[in-house]
Length: 218
Ligand code: SAM
Image (cartoon, rainbow, N blue to C red; front, side, top):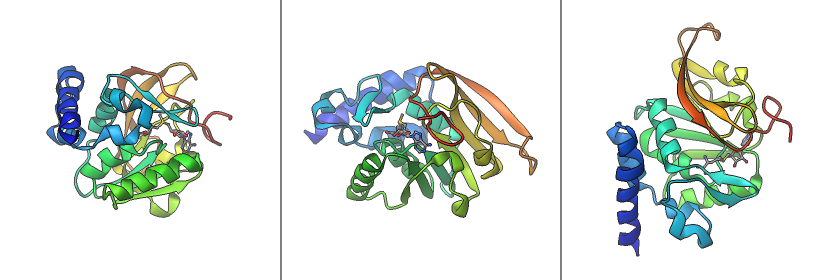
């Protein structure tokens, strides 16, 4: 059984991720290691390694493997880095981040999802992930600054409070756009001035809404 999922993961990495030009070996290794099938509902286990997002309850989703890899590569993580994630969801992206960085702080607005992710991440031994329930559009001020921030829900605009919580040189990767379609952006903070930002377009995408005071209305 375990071997079957290992094979599916290797195939997922080769056919969906490496083949689409994700090159960072650390990211490919993490995607080949984290047991994605444990992060989906029991009834969807056989689809866990497919090339698409899947529902995780509460009208939310676990992102497509390629999108997880693309966003993670763009974060350009080093082993000593401190990362903030907005939108814990299933906890899958948090586990990938935990493989690549020193510490991960993740915020989820839906308490049941946060609880389920916490239990699974503990079971898998990802003790370098802290999870908080709340509106992630405010960031996590007590733990700032972060070397990297990832928002895994679609935002109407770039949340300024999160840019403020980046180190100089820090990276923010997020989908920005309408409720129906967004552009995946990578922002790099270039200096103390929070308006001094380098912006890169990583392509089109479609995420569930970022809901909060600096996101969409519920
Ligand atoms: N990263 C997740 C994973 O690996 O399963 C997928 C996240 S799902 C696409 C987006 C998540 O963002 C949902 O769980 C949703 O409840 C959460 N969310 C939306 N707005 C939020 C906010 N303001 N603060 C925290 N979480 C938020």
